[in-house]
Length: 320
Ligand SMILES: [Mn+2]
Image 1 (tube, protein in one colour):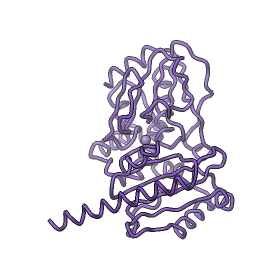
Image 2: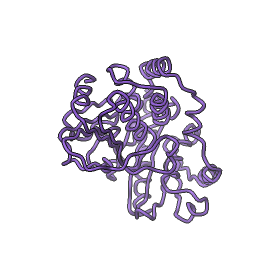
Image 3: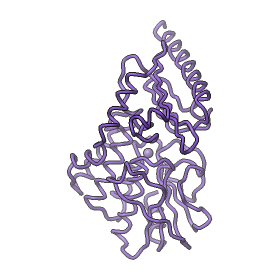
Image 4: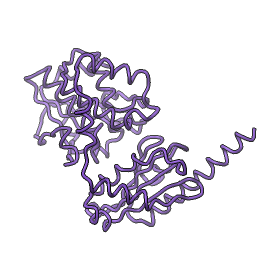
């Protein structure tokens, strides 16, 4: 797989790297790191990383303006389905490659390298760089580390394996960088976000089935001066609450006329419920976009039912 992809990279003079809408650090860092590694290895190639950015992630790196391209290669990172690819116009490309760690949704590229056991797309890019002649440096390594750390929530998830640590170890060995600087770029945040987190903790409703959820209206976002994407991302900070097995943030996004729902679980798999509402993601971490709070409450009801079944099954297992 590494060689097949490397050969295509070698072949094309123009390469565009895209990833999913609703940018996150793994998506962004995987495309920027791949771009910079290709630029470093092949200074004459034109390489662009495209898609809409977010001020929040300016510390990670900057994207390129989309240019009109011809006979170009498109590499899509961190995205399982075509409709969620940000900004790429597929008809402009002669060849397409997908590099992704989400569960398979659909085939839309000529080469698809999918490892749904990998912690992050950045982990796959580290693997790729270490196993091909592609060049790297400490800045690129730091980017990749940031994406991996972010998607694994600082190595908290089971998706972190011996392979993850061994790749990180080689990366640090070959291209050393300062960990604390990487963490600052990822985690330094304004006080108002921390205050909104306090609001979420205070207002989270917890059902008797251990479902926690909180509604964050546009009014609240204004009060705390936080945007809806930042609020949605806070969901990851509510892991390890004794009384909560599945937790959900329901955030109003007036600008895009939608309700963003972020679901996390350390109990049952929640991806099927997310898919029922045309969302998706991972088994224990999914997202959905809805139109109304009422729809969101239907989803909450479904998750609560899912938890009832989960507890029943657990009880039966204990009884046996
Ligand atoms: Mn990812």
